[in-house]
Image (cartoon, rainbow, N blue to C red; front, side):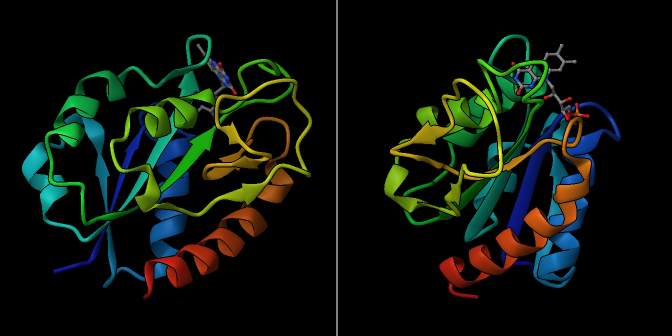
Length: 169
Ligand SMILES: Cc1cc2nc3c(=O)[nH]c(=O)nc-3n(C[C@H](O)[C@H](O)[C@H](O)COP(=O)(O)O)c2cc1C
C-alpha cells in the first residue's frame, strides 16, 4: 500500500489535478496515489500515514467547491498521527487580495496544525493579502499557473524534496 495520499479539488483536468500528478511523479508512484476529493471518503483518508491536500482558490478566497463536502469527510478521519502538507493554486494578478486563500482555509480548518509541514517562502510572489500566509511564510506550496507558469516545475520539485524530508521518507 502507498504511504502518501494526495487529495485534490479543482476543475476537472485543471491545474490542481495537474500539480497532483506532478507531485506524485516526484514522490514516485509506489509511494503516492492521487484522489479527486469528489470521490473520496473518510475511510480513504484513513488508509494513509501522510496526506497532501490540494485546492484551487475559488469564489473570493474560498476553497474549490468540491472541497466543501470533502472537508467534513477529512475532519472525521483520524488526523492526529498523520503528517500533512498542503498546496494551493491561485492567480496573484487577478486575485491579489485573496491569493491562494483556498489552502489558507484548509489549514484553518485542520485540528492538528502542528502536523503540517511544507511551509515555503513568499518572496517570489507579488500580492497584497493571503490567508495562507502565517508569520511571513505560506503554510504550503503556492502555485500560480496563470501568471507564473514558468516557475511551476521548479517550485514543485523543490517542494517535493522538502516534503519528502519533512515526512521522513
Ligand atoms: C471563479 C474563480 C474564482 C477564483 N478565485 C481566486 C481567489 O480568490 N484567489 C486566487 O488566488 N485565485 C483565484 N482563482 C484562480 C484559480 O485558483 C486558478 O486559476 C487555478 O489555477 C484554477 O485551478 P483549477 O484549474 O484546478 O481549477 C479563481 C478562479 C476562478 C475561475
